[in-house]
Image 1 (cartoon, helix red, strand yellow):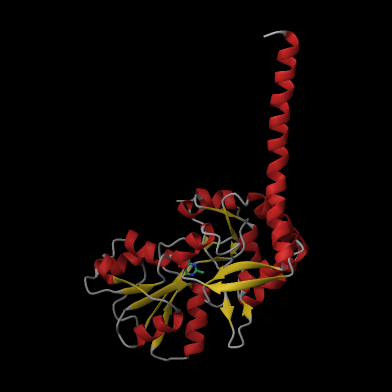
Image 2 (cartoon, rainbow, N blue to C red; image 1 turned 30 degrees about the horizontal axis):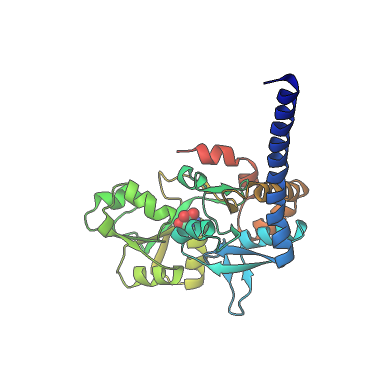
Length: 283
Ligand code: 6CS
């Protein structure tokens, strides 16, 4: 190939690469521009206070949506619109384009980190059991339930507690999928399950509202890790996630992050003392 032809080919090649590189930020910027134009970000939540909550008037609150609302506002997206989803359906819903983000206390774990683009950490919590007063079967860990052939546990479908119970050896037939906190409480009260398991702050909120002297909380569950969530974005929306992280970091730095989440019982320090990288690598 003559020298001039080589130069022209090189220029053409460079132009293609430049066009591609320029397009990526534009595509990502488009997503943020799309949300700005839409006027809201569609978020998936579970309605599990204090992580997420929907009032009788339809108002969405909870630490995760409150942080998301503030971050999106600073990105120029006026508000968030929430839809309630089972934890196990949140990632498929995100991937199918039904949500723009999951802001629900969806804890970071390697398999989830492989499926979505998480923000930096937002809400951290340990795990808890809600059970009958006096803890008649002495359950303090998921392994305790596995060892007792009569032991049964309820947990959200596709949730962390369901997985922890199965991984501890509780047979599938003794791990009951429970759709929401009220159902879990009632099933323990009625003796249909021995234990209902959620994160500590969720179980404490449920127990406090139930105000049932026949109920007892075991927290933290022995042997279970402390998890943290992040806002979860669709793979491919990393630039939107990065923009979210920039504003989240400013909130953390200014103390406003603590002002949003600590009234709900969460620790800002817990979220600020770890990273997405560490949480996604943890086993
Ligand atoms: O991330 C999860 O799977 C868990 N997160 C919360 C806030 N509640 C239960 C759920 O299993």
